[in-house]
Length: 255
Image (tube, rainbow, N blue to C red; front, top):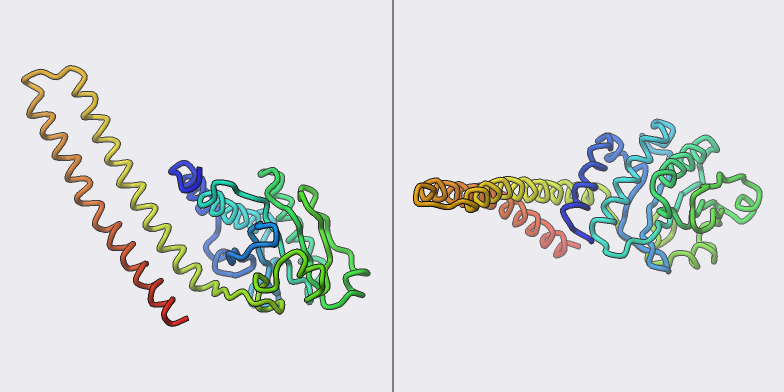
């Protein structure tokens, strides 16, 4: 079930496996766009910046992708395979292989997680002549698509395509990461609060099994501790949530 504590714990474990530097590198993005079939998109933008796939092992990148998968599984009751879009216009073969290897690592651990893989290039001639790695576990096709071609438009609507590929989908990676860290802080605080409350509830239940006149004070103390736990831990959660909501509303007005 989406947004359950169980799926949250999976997501948190996945996040702990990702190196912070890699998360901030923008090597792979989860912009929130979808394909024509409603599949979530993972975008590998141009790798000519300060950090590229060559700077990381395929297993590191796969850990980042697994975190994105866990986010999607946490928030969706009916998760679908991902549509992978790779900006391969200026990409050398070694980088393409590293990205393909990271996807292969991912599909070896999570069945059906990768659908179509689109390697976007400059022109039809390149798409026909270049050799692109096959992602063995993908459920769709591994395609070399000319930028702005009918093939790419057929896979992802133009308004859902990244701006750097000629599309119209607005996405700010730095803001996404900023809000993502806020959301995870709230979730961590909620989980911690629930864990502490559950400990106190179990203690109360164990006392209630054999209640007698001598247990009244003990029960009262346990109940007071439960209330104190919730009273102390809930306000920080609500304050963090309120700050995040205020920022989101401000961004919405400024957009």
